[in-house]
Image 1 (cartoon, rainbow, N blue to C red):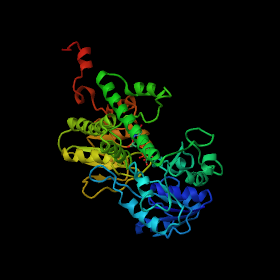
Image 2: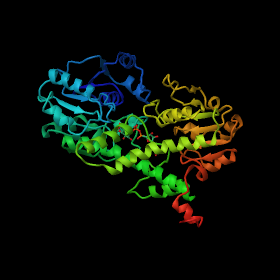
Image 3: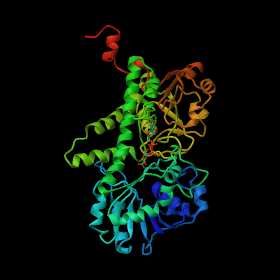
Amino acid sequence: MNVTVVGAGYVGAISATVLAYLGDRITCVESDPVRLAAWRSGTDPLREPGLGDMLRRVDVRFVPHADFADADAILVAVGTPMGRDGRPDLEQVETAAAQIGARARPGAVVLMRSTVPVGTCDRLQSGPLHEQRVVSNPEFLREGHALRDAFFPDRIIAGGPADARATVAELYGRIIDRYGLPRDLSADNGSSGPVPFRWMSATSAELAKYAANGFLATKLSFANEIANLAQAVGADASAVLGSMGLDPRIGSQFLRPGLGWGGSCFPKDTRALQAIGDGMGYDFLVLKAAIEQNARQLRGFAAAIERELPQGATVGLLGLAFKAGTADTRESPAIALARLLLRAGLAVNAYDPAVREVAGDLKIRVHSTAAEACDAADAVVIATEWPEFAAIDLGAVRRLTRGDLLFDGRSVIAPAAAAAAGFRYAGPAGFSERSIEMTAVQRLRLGTAA
Ligand code: UGA
């Protein structure tokens, strides 16, 4: 099939690479000249594991603009950043739709891979793309695991005019049948049968994307609340959450407590889902609480650190990326934490295995090793769940630091191991006796209930 992909960001570049590997003729349009030059020279500007290597094995034609005339399918994978009112800014989608509508052949299938508000595909179908067939086809890949998620997805969701279904099924046929996929990658969910392919209305497919991210974010906020409560009542959060995860209806993933969730998707998509509800006069209570809890989680973690340190003290901050396995710092809780600590008068020496620089207005020093960042620090703070930090030689770090405080904002260190190395350890909920106000349960335990 002749396929044109608009946008060479995460979703676009991965989709282009995967479809090229599977034998389609791929043109990928990227308007940013720096990014375009990087892709053309065979380097991956996103630094996604394995992508550069895979790209060199396939034939993707990267171009600054396309005429779309010979495309059977067009994938729209442009950015939909959060606008000022919490709703996604659709400018890039509108521009792409206008160009495709003007140049693509009638009947061409336009797959919307960007995350767009419910109703967008139907609106484009009756507007600039009235001659084409518009299909909502949300993407579920995770940064850091993008190639594997694209070759071995849990499901393929698509929706639009019934006569577009066969084209979509053909486009993803090899992925659905798990045929001709790279041997050096494999499904990490252990499944081997055909990939579930769900066809529905465009509106349902659009909502399915927001629903998935909204639910995962809510699950994390719930796990963080349980961890905070566990701290307050003197329970072991990892034992509690670990036992919950053994119930297959709950599942063990996305239960690791932390200083909050971030990234280019969850914050944007949860706000957008809330706005979709608001727009319909529907008050999405659970989601609103999850968003609010996430902000409170970060503030609580920062406050717990500030309470322990005098003004002018130095924090060794391990982690800047919004999660492990990526250099992405968009909406990173680690960066937001650094800003709060600076505002509280603390100095921050940071290290991240993938992030070498931060925005100029963020007055922190970024070092090239964890040891440098922790040298003479009054407290060590883990803000990204890199395996390197989980395996760090705590004894060696403790010999470098001035203070004995270790704040593990990602639950990657065993408290006993921290204690054995001479650290006073606090998880994402901080130190129980000071960081959380006495709860009703504690009052009961102490026999001081009103
Ligand atoms: C997320 C979804 O997981 C993907 O399925 C989706 O396709 C993608 O958004 C998207 O909409 O494009 P991603 O943003 O790459 O993927 O990040 P996640 O792996 O979901 O992590 C999000 C945040 O949750 C990170 O800050 C991470 O550190 C945090 N997290 C994750 C936890 O705090 N605890 C956990 O147990 C898991």
